[in-house]
Image (cartoon, protein in one colour):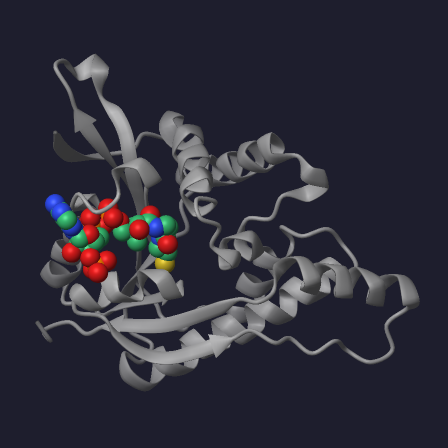
Length: 243
Ligand SMILES: CC(C)(COP(=O)(O)OP(=O)(O)OC[C@H]1O[C@@H](n2cnc3c(N)ncnc32)[C@H](O)[C@@H]1OP(=O)(O)O)[C@@H](O)C(=O)NCCC(=O)NCCS
């Protein structure tokens, strides 16, 4: 079987998001549930909402970010037989000093108001501050590259598809002389290390419940913590020119 990497059109984003969710659920990567929660057990709505957000981002791009979704397809006999087998969202940021507060708030809004959102907000603060602390210490506020998504469908793993998706972005980062910063899930760490990334910090997420919450909000917080934790994230970096 032969695999190619292609650009993803805005219209294809719903298929990408559905494939991404399946990939991250098989087996389940706990950190994915924090970034892409399912509300009221409605998986289809979660996929549709995320796809709509990504389509809106693609149609109204942020001036500070160049988002590039790519897909890996298996090329069978004809172009119409092409099957989506993996994907990545490479993000090239031009100004590394952007507003963390806004970013954290917009991520937390994916969770329902109340204890769940408070839990998410504090979790994203811990993760984003960890990434920012490490990145500012090495890359400074200059441009850098990152990954918003990276996956191969379970049935197609260990065939070199991840490598193709990685090479595509690393070539672009190298051309531009950019460091690449990622937050990796522990099972993917050896894969990233094989591509020149080094571990900077390991976070075992343990948000602290704020004092003074109402009984209802505290119970929502506890339920969210119970359903999402444990989550471990590894801040990793591949320095431009280090390979
Ligand atoms: C991480 C992930 C994207 C890797 O994708 P992949 O397509 O399996 O990647 P590759 O095939 O290029 O490499 C995977 C392994 O297979 C090995 N491999 C590659 N081609 C191979 C082949 N033809 N035969 C045997 N092994 C092979 C590689 O050496 C590599 O080993 P490593 O993981 O120890 O580095 C995939 O496991 C995945 O989607 N996981 C779930 C989602 C996820 O965790 N994403 C990352 C979030 S941070």
